[in-house]
Length: 280
Ligand SMILES: C[S@@+](CC[C@H](N)C(=O)[O-])C[C@H]1O[C@@H](n2cnc3c(N)ncnc32)[C@H](O)[C@@H]1O
Image (tube, rainbow, N blue to C red; front, side, top):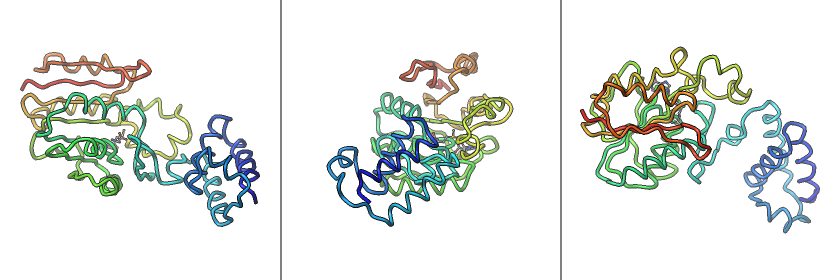
């Protein structure tokens, strides 16, 4: 079959599952992933024949998309910080707002001779992106999920970044020494919100990555309660937060020796990050 015809057929199939914008987006990703074809190639190579083997691989992928499995899990790849990251159902698919958290750390942490810990690292997107940008002295990352740690290690290797990964349940244990910087995008979705999430999130993404169950501030409270085990004197927290809980998170710092407490908006003007310095 000629590429032109194949693209039309594939688009019609995708339109049975997605709206126009999403179908076009998925079409571009599939053509790029399986055939290495850009949008321009679709025109330039319109008359070329498509590889039948690849066509059957795409069919299998479309079958999974019909089940509303996220395309990132279907292809076992997502783009974060402009680079491909391996993902599977053991880790949250990194979100665009987390790139803003990485940017916040990079903007504020220019000194290289520092140690950084990422709590709840998932795919390892945060420490790997930080390590790709800056040669920080030490980058550690932990997660309660051993399967997530395996994924994160793959990504560090893929991008040739040195990160010390370890399994750690931050609600029960603590790292052996404090850090200059602790960054975290912990589970913060409210338990009652889970039901209203899209099927592809609630049925495919790991529930322990989404919600702490019960109190949505669990992880922030724990990090503050144990701050002396997490941060050196003068150390900084950088957290991603639920957009509706900004004021509640900032309130947690009251009566504690912190300064430079800032609630930071994402590019859409939503309260999505908090930073603060511990005075010890
Ligand atoms: C919101 S996801 C963030 C993943 C990744 N950092 C990102 O930004 O895409 C939260 C992560 O916290 C981990 N997690 C959940 N409970 C934890 C615990 N008690 N201790 C350490 N990590 C935990 C989950 O496995 C998950 O990888």
